[in-house]
Image 1: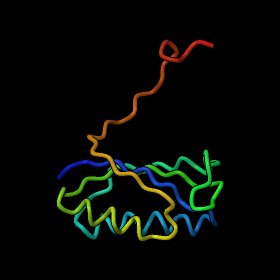
Image 2: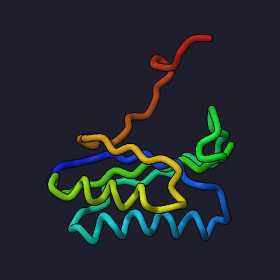
Image 3: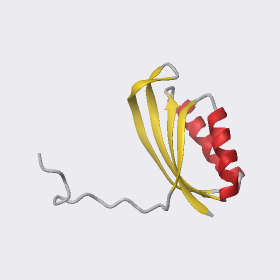
Image 4: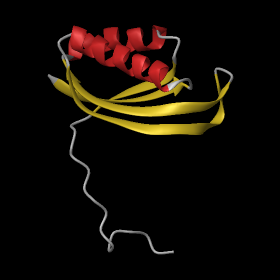
Length: 108
């Protein structure tokens, strides 16, 4: 299995609607014998330009592993979901993020 990272831009809505959309994405991955490694909700933010006439969206990151033969099927299913405005999937080996130390922080 290969590891991937997906960045999702979702339509804003109630918390339940957003959870249902995320759940649909994770179920699609699990349906193709994939595993979810890490999920991260980046929250509701304004888009830099209107995306499908939406000026605000929920950003979500999902790390998962999946057989390479199934990735095109998964991407197609994501694009058919009307609640997903944009999705980008990258090949990625997931590494746990390192905490930022005081020496690594940019100087102001």
